[in-house]
Image 1 (tube, rainbow, N blue to C red):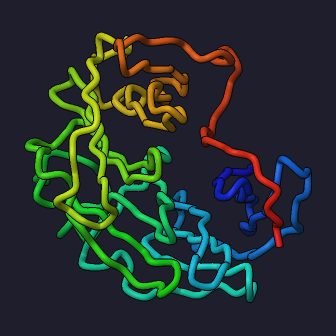
Image 2 (cartoon, helix red, strand yellow):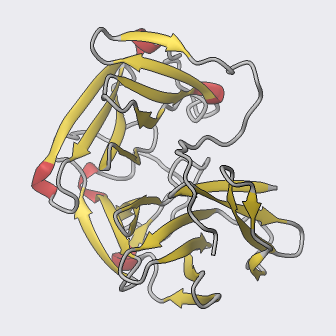
Length: 281
């Protein structure tokens, strides 16, 4: 099985079998793919390993790095020296990082990897009402120094949503998205990265407009989530991943919804991609 993560036009593919995990770097534009890199054995405790896998670029050294979390253990692989390094004390500050259903993978932005986290919840086993919005935080790992920072989510979020909030990158800005009262989907944008005061509400979308089933239950709530994938170059069209991994095009100017072509094709992973001639070395 291969799970893709994309940066600078390069696709990092995670491979897993019963014995070990590894990854390959692939450039679809040139057709070049690396050999297996960073092979390692995942820790086993009798259950599936909830994990996050992120590919990013260390601007300070000009090096691509892979960040991997499994059972709250984090390590970083540098393509420059082909070595895994363990990062101690993760998650930091007694935060728990939800890693369910692949909707909270680490998000790469400007030399950092970022996760939504829940403060003072050292062990994450379920997302429930036994938390408050004051516990919502974002953890940011600097790929250059391999140290952490934390900052608050938007102050305008005043209740715990039924579904875990997610973060994404739209037009080179960190975004925080969540549900309101099972009727709306809201995206906040951090215009200046790391500055908590720069959070502003980017868009508020009615479920009725995007035709999302709002009949939440413990069984189907993860099938009903929406995830912002990317914005068009002119900022007029927002591509969302909707329930059952269907893509929809949301026209911001007139609140018009358009189903993306190819929705009839079964697919599991979704990533935005811009081709380049970057070298995999």
